[in-house]
Amino acid sequence: MASADLARLWRVHEIDAALVDIRAHAGALDPGTKLQQEIAALTKHLEEKGGEAKALAQEQIDLELAQKSLQEKLKKNDRELYGGSLLNSREVEARNREMEMIKNQRDSMDERLLELMELVPPAKALAEKIQKRIDEKKAELAEFRKGALAEKSRLEEEFRIQTAKRPQAIAGIAPGLLARYDDIRKKSAGIGMARITREQACGACGMALPERSVQNAKDDKVVTCEACHRILYYSESIL
Ligand SMILES: [Zn+2]
Image 1 (cartoon, rainbow, N blue to C red):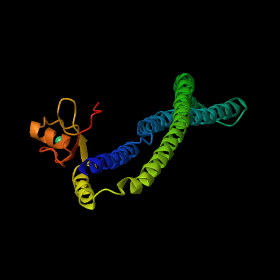
Image 2: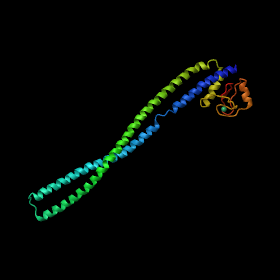
Image 3: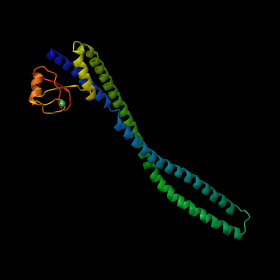
Image 4: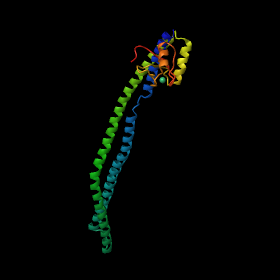
């Protein structure tokens, strides 16, 4: 009986459609792409801002050292000039000019050091803030991945359940009809059957069906949709 065969085949179709659906879901599972991109962008930002903070801090250290060495020179000079060392007046004059230059140098260093004292703390704070943001996003990603893995396991289990149902569902279906169905299914994105809607259209592609096709389906004949070539299924309990 075609009727019983088609009804059985519809059960197989429901299993196959569920499998298609599960595959699509599994394929669309997000591994956290958006969060990964955010982390990558923040890491790049940190590289830049962290580099700036480090350069400013290093400049401050270097300047402090340079300033210290100038300070030493000035002190040494004072000791020599006023400590009774043997310099003639011309030498004293030259030395004073040299010390004047050193003092100017030291003063401009002072200015830059004052600037750096203002610049370094906020630059460091910004880099730390970005690092904190990265840590937060990484924790968020770990949490997200846990959820995605749980969803993947759920889909795998559902896939296993549906697959296990199939051998029993195909038992008793005329081999010719099953082969035809499988052939159509493989050519049509995994969906080989379509229900006739209340509006007498193909439930898969939406094509309006000729009265003759609907009548044939009602008479339990194997009819296919002229547009998508799927086997049409008629049942009283249409949605
Ligand atoms: Zn169709």
